[in-house]
Image 1: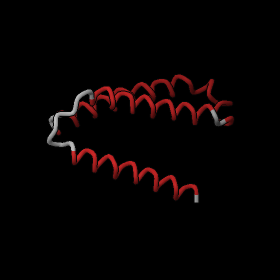
Image 2: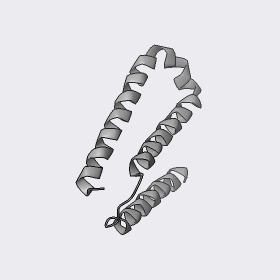
Image 3: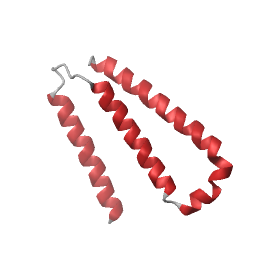
Image 4: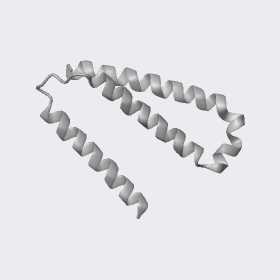
Length: 92
């Protein structure tokens, strides 16, 4: 049941974002980059929170910390690049 609620929440968030984006597509939206960066940082924070609350993962973390750091840096870098490309495509 919890998995179904999670999927419903994600679907609702996506649908709300699509509707808001559709309604604002003709308008000049200011400070979108800050909102996108804030969203990315919130996602990374939630990833860190879920890792920190998992004791099994924390037990093996010393052996994989460098790989996790590289993965985090790459995810952040490519998320920002994709967001900037999407903004250029939509001409925001």
